[in-house]
Structure formats: structure tokens, C-alpha cells
Amino acid sequence: MRRSFSIFIVVALMLSVVATGYAAKYPIKPVKIIVAFSAGGGTDTAARVMAKFAKKYFPQPFVVVNKPGAGGQIGFEALAFSRKDGYTIGFINTPHVVSHYVSGRAKYKLSDFQPICNVVTDPGVLAVRSDDKRFKTLKDIVAYAKKHPGKLSAATTGPGGDDSIALALFTDEAKIKIKDVPFGGSSKEKAALLGGHVDIGMVNVSQIWSLVNAGKLRMIAVMTKKRLPYLPNIPTFKEFGYAVYSDSSRGIAAPRGIPSHAFKKLSETFTKVMKDPGFIKEAKKIHLLLNFMNAKQFEEYLLTEEKLIRKVYKKHPW
Image (cartoon, rainbow, N blue to C red; front, side, top):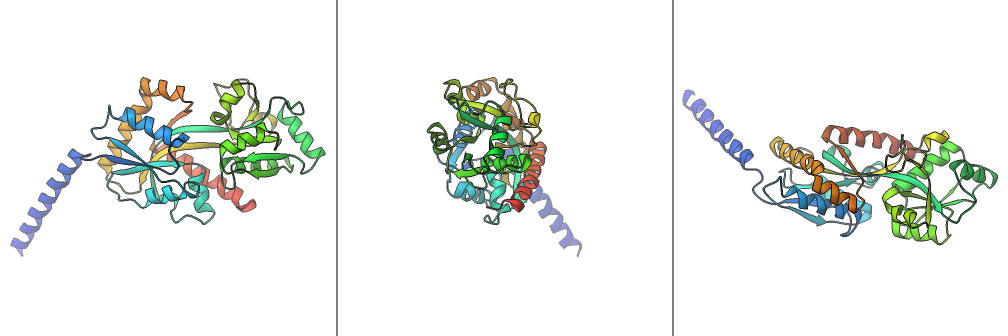
């Protein structure tokens, strides 16, 4: 009995040494970053710039792998059910990562992800054509919608997306009717607005920044709690009395349950990247609206997003 116990102690110590050695060596191979959208898009661009600057702080390369399809669902599921060894991480996008499982389409749950940090937050904004003289403020849009029920149309990227959710929040708050016209992507959405096929666009700031600067579109109101420092002249929905808050965030997560040493190393690495002056400069050039949240803050944000989306889905299922 005593000999068996001694053997057990020896084996336990050996395993402890092996585990300690493994922790000290992490990472010993490249880490894969799953992007749930096509190459060349906003999330893909953010991932590749992050990977580029992470080389300064991480001893192994990050390799971006695109797994597009089903509005991000395919990539999100691949991430959620990857091996929990610290060698697969990925970007998760709101509201899509939440919308898919709230609607019952996805196999994963929010608890299957272990948030590492948020990278980008792209606020929602209501925009109109610059030559549309009907609408100067949000009050004009509400007044028009009440006078002409159901006549106004709004471009969105489709059910479950932040644009469509924002429109539902706005029409509920203002007690008006505006037709949701989904286009399945921001490019088609912008083209429809510019071509006069819809009256307003429920879009994101980065998507129309260049069109606003070119004098083709006007921002009417942003969907943030306070005015944005880089758009100080654009009022919020809240200023008009409407509690409409919406954005699209892109953050990094791992499958829930990766080793603590791997999580710590990844968190430290991406925190350094987000503070890197070179990264900040390059992000600004390509209009990445950086908004760092650490793991705890990012998880709290995701849980708040889940509550909001469940509320909207109950009334406006997709």
C-alpha cells in the first residue's frame, strides 16, 4: 500500500513537471486566428493588422484562416468547438455571434467562448443622401414617418444584424413604422441609399465615412450614449429622446477552457498590440475604430448585448 502511494506521488510529480515545462514553452507552434468572414473585409483586415504587430510580442506567428458563410455562423461554430489548447483563437462579431444562437440557428452558446479582448467598435448611425432636403434632423424623420405611416424605407444588412436591430429599436422608441429593406451586405446597402432606392440607411460609421467626406451622404444621428469625440457635431439618438444604442464590435476570443497560461500570454500580447503606437497609426489609416476592452469588460459587454438582442428578438423575431 505504501509502495503504491509512493508510485502515485512520483507519477504526480512527473506530470506536474511536464505540465510546468509545457506552460513555460507555450507557444511552441503558430496560433490560428479564425475569421468568420471573407478575406478583404473589415474583420479580416483587423485580424491581419493585429497579427502583423503581434510578432513583436509573441514568439510564434498568428495565421489568419477565413471560414466565411451563414453570416459568420460557420466560423463562430468552428471557433467555439476547436481544441482548447490555446492554438486556435478567433474574432467574434456582434451582434451576429449572439443573434445566431438567440434565434436558435447556432449550435454554440455565448458561454462556449472565452473572451480575450475587444479590438474595434463601429457605432451605428442613421444616414441620408446629402441632396435629400426633407431631413435635417432626427425630428424631421420621425415627423415624416408619423405623417406618412409605412412610406419610409430603410436600408439594412438583414435580419439579426445590428442595422436591423437598430431600426427595430428606433421604430419602437419613436412609435413609427419604417420598412426594413435588407440588402445582405454594406456595399449593396450603400448603393441603394446613394441611388435613392431607400430613404434612409441604418449603417455603421466606418462604412460611410468616405462618402460623408465626399459630400454624398449626411449623418443624422449616432447610436451611442455620448457624442463621439471624432464626430462632435453629430448628435445622438438619446439627445432626441430615443434610447437607441447600437454598434458592431469585433473582438478576440478562444474556446472556453483553454489553459490559464495560454490565456494569460494571449491577453498580454494583444494588450501590448492595442497600445503599440505603430498599430494605432496603421489602424487609423484604414479606419479601424479601436475600442480596447479587456477580457472582463468584453465579457460584460457581450452579456449586455445578449439581453438586448433577446428583448428585440422576442418582439421582432427573424
